[in-house]
Structure formats: C-alpha cells, structure tokens
Length: 275
Image (tube, rainbow, N blue to C red; front, side, top):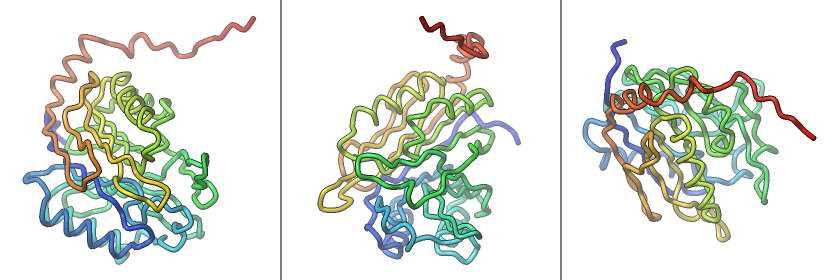
C-alpha cells in the first residue's frame, strides 16, 4: 500500500453509562452520526466505553466478537458508512473458552474486522480489581492504517515503556493509548503519555473517558493528541463529551527522525554493576 504523509484523526471522549451497554451503543452511534468531523480517516474510542470502568459489571457485558454481536455490528457499520478506520477503544470480549479480555477491535474502511488487541497489563491496585475478572493479552499489535504504522495500547499499558519501544523498533509512526483514567492521577497521565511520544519520536493519541464512574470515582477527562516533540496539538481539557481532531502530516516527524537518530544509540543490553 502506498504510504500517506497524513491522516485525519478524530478521538471521541465520552462518559459511559456504567453497566448499560445498550445506552452506550446508542450514545456512540448518536455522537458519531451527528458530530463526526468531516473526512475523518481514523476514529478512536476510549477504553471500556461499552460498560464504563466497573469491574463487577464486566462479566455481564461480555460478548463474543461475531458479526451479529452488538459491538461488531455498530462499529463495522460506522466504519463502512463513513469510509474510515475505527480503533474501537475496548469492550469486554468473551472468548470461546469463556475467559474475558479487555479488547480493542480494529475495523478498516470497508467495515471489515482487521485484528483485535487484548490489553496486556491489567490494573489491580488502589481498589481496582481488573485482574480478578480479565485475562491479560499476550501479544502487542501494530496495524498499517493507510500506510501509517500504528501501535495500539490500552490504559495501564502506558506505564510499560517496553511495549512502546518495541513498536518503535518495528517502525511505528503513531502510538495510541485508549483509557478510562482516574481523575486522581493527573500527573502520571500527562507525563507518561508525553514521555511515550518523545522517547519514541512518534505521534501519540492519549484518549480517556470523562465524567463520573460512580458516586466516589470520576474519569480524568483530559484527552490529548501529542506530537513527536511532546507538544499538545489537540485536546479536550474539561469533562465534556465530544471529539478532538488533528490532521497529521507525518513527513515532519520522519525528517526529524532522520536528523536525530536516537535508535542507533540504543544498546542491545545494559549491564548493571551492583556494588
């Protein structure tokens, strides 16, 4: 496929209705149908938008990724209708063996399911119990989107630079992290997302949910698109639902990579002397 220098990215920040998959499907369909920026090449959704960050609700919302499943049907139809790629945030996927995964489905412009990424790192700290309900994924996933190599991660994956470095070694130009990030952790959200962009000289989409989760918890609601130098080029600062959009020309990034060849300085291993 011929490489494009640019993509128009649209990321939807929303507040899921906790435990109500049907309401969330209808909400996404309505927001996309009424407000999707014109000529969007790639639509990105946040983590667990189908159910909200409610681990106890995960098993009830789980579904297989068959063509007649609710999530598959909606995302496939939207991708085809608007001639765009969709990185489907994540939903709770029920495997044939009954195990549950926190999974991101990827659809191409024709509405075809290209691949599924299963979240590798599960957050089970500070009152969260994701690992008690969800099985961790075992592989990373990089997708060629109209010639742009795109590395996919979900939420807690952002704390593990190793997966992002592997994407960069394989030529990733765009990194995506789809999250349901808690409001009490603003500094890690800002620092880690920018760090992953800077250290890998790549564009970064850091998309999270907004609004309340329950009576005690709230999503951070500060989504960003970050360039290869760490600059924020699009963002939603507050708790409102809506789209952030950026038209990205990757040629500037490639020029910078050719001038600042960081990967050439990477050692195969780093011996640590302990005294």
